[in-house]
Image (cartoon, rainbow, N blue to C red; front, side):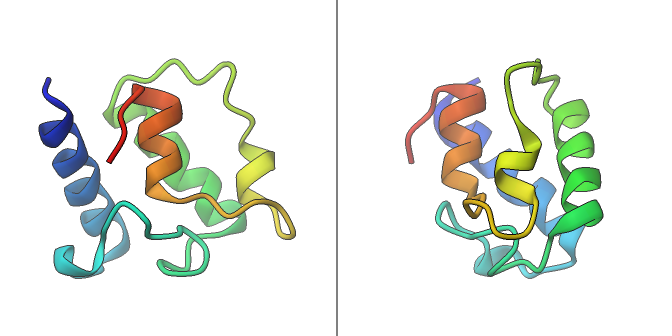
Amino acid sequence: MEPDQTYERVRVFTAKYTGEDLASIHSNSGLQNDLAIAGLDGMAFMDNFFEEFEVDYTDFVLDKYICEGFRPLKLTILLRRLFGLST
């Protein structure tokens, strides 16, 4: 799948999951700050994300991005870390 197609699939998935308007979701959208996904909701989002995109996430440390006080997880990070894509 082409990078643009993957990026668009991630945006559509995120919009459906959050109920946000697709136009408001971009590569720099933060899950916690912009989309209000944090804590257990963030874990559930990521579980669904990994399943939807068939991602091997054994090396992805969720606590590093999801727990309060840690680095905000942005869609850019997901695309880069999990798919090797830049936006």
